[in-house]
Each structure stands twice: as structure tokens, then as C-alpha cells.
Amino acid sequence: MTSRFRCIRTIAGAVVLCAFPALAFAHTEAGMAGGFVSGFTHPILGWDHVVAMVAVGLWGAFLGAPAIWLLPVIFPLVMAFGAALGVAGVPIPAVEAGIASSAIVLGMLIALAVRLPLWLAGAIVGLFAIFHGYAHGAELPEAANPLAYGVGFVVATGLLHLIGIAFGLLVRWPAGTVAIRAGGVVISAVGAAFLFGYA
Image 1 (cartoon, one colour):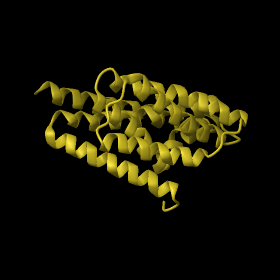
Image 2 (image 1 turned 135 degrees about the vertical axis):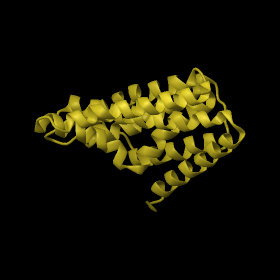
Image 3 (image 1 turned 180 degrees about the horizontal axis):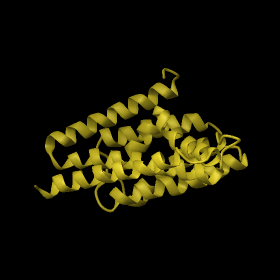
Image 4 (image 1 turned 90 degrees about the horizontal axis):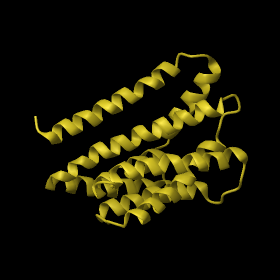
């Protein structure tokens, strides 16, 4: 078995193992379950969130080390800050447009194979993370435990990043690079559909 296949198998295994905490929390008392499960499902049930978070992992893998691990770390950290702003009710304009735009921009960066300096890539990812985090925080269910809810959406975000990274490993092959860039077009199109109200 080649090292490439071992790496893909390891990431796939991590995705599966990371999913088990969600299953465990789903059977706990109502407050914790409501908080964690609500937080975990919130990013997954919104395609605008899904494609943008997958795009972060995909772009990181495309850029290579250290972006492959740094971008998926920056996003949830800054997203948690955005969530705190949402919980506190601090007004941020055009949140939904910011979320949709994140998919458009990240998708185009992937589609066009753009390689930016790491600090600029991190700044772009961090900016969009604020909008995603704010949406999670502002939509915190009243009965939910804020901490459990926050852990839920951070875990879900990490899993989506891992999925993006796993697909991004295809960049090692010429056909894989074409597929990744085509995926960027799809991600951007989904973002545009949300931005203009077609989804």
C-alpha cells in the first residue's frame, strides 16, 4: 500500500471516529443533546455552510503544508469569536451575503488554482469564518446549552474541513487536480445560488 493511500485511509478513519462523539451526545439528557446536536447539525443542514467549510479544507490541501492544517485551524477559532458576537447580539451587516460570498470566493480560488501567501489565505478564511460563526451564535436555540452547542458546531466544522482535505489529496494526480478545480466551480456556483436566492 502506497503512502498516498495510507494517508487517505487515515483521514477517512479520522472522519469516522470524529463522528462518534455526536452519536454519544445524541443519547444524553435533553439540555446537552439539544445543545450539542443542534450545534452539530446546524452547519451540516445548510448547504451554504457545507460547501464553504469543505472549501477551506480543499483549498488548504491544494496549497499544501502548512496551509493544509493551518487554514482548518484558523477557521473554527475565528468562527468561535464570530459566534460569541452573535450570542451577544452585536450587529454585523449582511451575514447571509457574507456566508454565500465565502463559498463563491473560496470556490473561485480553488477553480483558478490561486496560490496566495499564507498570511493572506489565513486572513481571507478568518474573515469568512466570522460570518459563519455569527450565524451559528445568533441562531442559538433558547433551550440549548451554549457551550455544548458551540462544541457541536466546531466538531461539525472540523469534520467538513477533513472531508475537504481528503478530497484535496487528489491534487497529487493530474486528473485529481482537474477534479478539484471542477469542485471549486461547483462550490462557487452553490454560493452564487444562495446569494441570489436560487437555493
